[in-house]
Length: 107
Image (cartoon, rainbow, N blue to C red; front, side, top):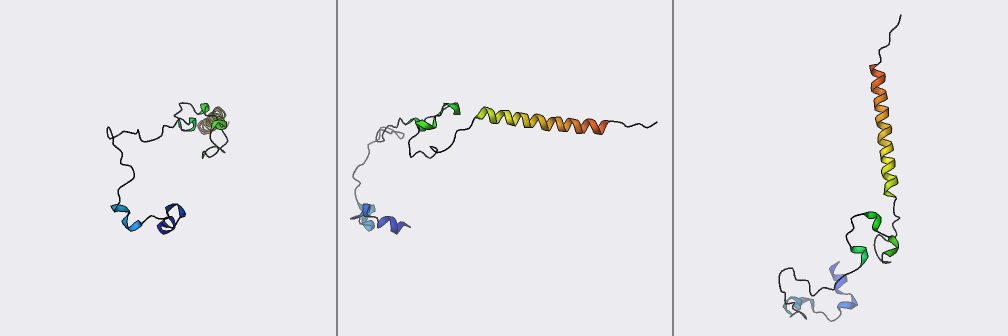
């Protein structure tokens, strides 16, 4: 829990009881409420917005990117299969409807 984090060597020397009373090492002076000048500019391609998923090349992602080991899928193949499945279901439904509408006459 929290005690494990406080006991980590990184935080050695921190007086947790007094931390709320200390002056922070940096007090940002913001130009406006959405000012981000104190943050590093990120130009990593793995975080950019893409219109088409086919634009993403898994090879370009950083080693630590959570989706690096995902295998890209061929979306068009999936869409074709979905289309074929829907067509087959429609044909089956039509066939059932037609067979129930058939009038059998005996002479």
